[in-house]
Length: 471
Image (cartoon, rainbow, N blue to C red; front, side):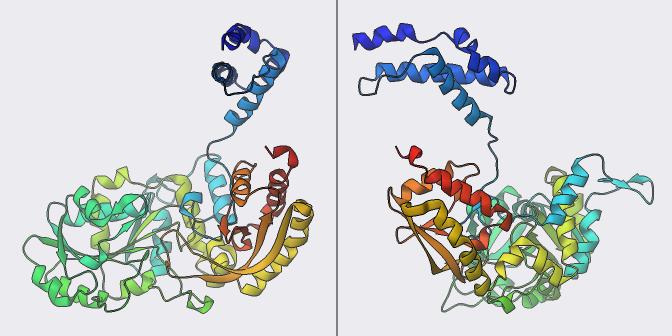
């Protein structure tokens, strides 16, 4: 140990390290503050390594240490939020950013971001305008609503609607609809945060109209209906329809709010998906306000969309919380561009990535696998077995939880190291690749791989199977 302690004196001083030829050259392309921090952390790591009798002795030559610093700088200089290749087969992967945007949305973001825009300026009147007007007409046209507004996400939309319509009073909800979704979003908690008292009716699996009717009193300001888009209760069940709730609520001069969650603008049953209520269908029942997400089945950016009766929407817009939750200009630009595609349903199916992935036929997925397989075999060589197998994809993002999309994937089995090792290596590639394991095989699902990312995927796999990375 005394010999190791003696080596501590040979650790290069930070200023001497920064003056090395390699780091001096690095100053031309990287910030000094980043290089100094990397140098300090590298020297600290070497000091700990010297004091650990179980660790190998490090190379303390100035150039060797400078090389370690340069490697650390390269890692630190990478953006924290960056592109990832998704081969999981989960279309709306919450951890990977949910819905990828269409090209029209990307162009709209660029156009608006590069300079100034008429975000809150009425070009016809030459005076201040409202930002929600850029999408209101489109939303109403696509859903049949009288008025609409948007906020930053659907949780915010629900919270704002509750506060505006029932703050200081109570709302009636079926026990079977007191959901929790990802990120600990719980309906009871959101109601409490909105200043709304919760009145539970019915049971977990069965709620009747008489349950709602018996719970209404002078404190009741709202009936809340929550579409259970992220789970299903099967078997002996019963729920009250939107039509019945609307009639009951309007008899007592109170509104009905339905949180549709995922939000669907077009029927996807022709593509083998289960029946889900569209926003238009929900509004046709007489429900006063519907909220839904922009970045789930709609296939746009993260946003909370509210559409319904004009007087109800006006109350929501006037609430002080509306400004705190308002949508930003880049999201608004992407949302408008995405909504415009829905004016032509066929165009939406072809150009909105989420809809395109949802509607891909098995034959197309088989062909994608066959096109990718030879290049994949060439990349991995004798280091892995690659075969095309049947597998299902999932929608994800809390949408269509019971849906399994039939398809084809490439199953990859490394020979020289474990599948878990492969997963780790791929996560550290540039760009990172995230996939899933089944039966000790790494699955590459072409459904969620952009055609433009094929070469990047092959490059990442080449890096992962590089023998020099085998430690």
